[in-house]
Length: 361
Image (tube, rainbow, N blue to C red; front, top):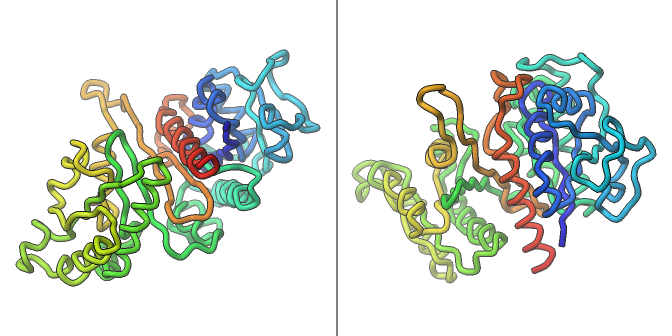
């Protein structure tokens, strides 16, 4: 199958439009899926200009109208370069028209861009729930901008959970051979410790098992990180391992899940990267994010420029497929044509993989 994927543009003031046009300039993307971008023409066309990607745009009203989705072109027809045949070279766009030419500013937090980026996401969710698309791939949004626009969410994960009425969900990060899921994410350290209960740890272990099976791994090997140094050292450095983490592991093990832990946080990730485990369940945001970004982000020590920005973020437990870039809006780089599309390409490929497992079995 060739899945249809909705790609939300992200915050117009950030690097979202740029990484979308750069990713869709790669012919390989059109060989594995039919991408449908949800965003604003003005921002995408401007990114197309300063990135020199030389693409055209086809405004459509529904995913079925995309060039390669079996439908017909939208009434607006093709903008930009004329005479291009096929699908590669033409971006099929659902244009929400929040922006006017020059009506937004790169590198700036704004209510307008927050509103626009939120609505791109909401549209993608609605399309996935109605099965108009097989999954959603999200560009980066600014939490500050969407909150300024009146949407009190701490990130994509919470938006998707709310609009799909999902109670039990978790964030899955992937970079190379390393996969990490989180018991807690966008909360303070104090709050994170309070949220680490037997019930929540058990839920994430089961979600991890479900997520890896969705990626085609039939018998996932799950490692659970401890919260405290040395996993608490038998209660010497904290008791969360004994009161919450170990009981959750015991329950999952009794049910036949392949899970080990709690394993000291300073060694569990390198063991996973060495192939001993398929996924690590991390206890809090930075415990999981730091090793993933060390794995996927590389900087040239001389130029101080990123030479690699790889990695994917998925939300597990939803009734729909959602994958995303594993980085933020990078306002400091926006509008300059220097952002890497590597993570967006990775996110699209993971979306394709999950769609094939879900819809083909």
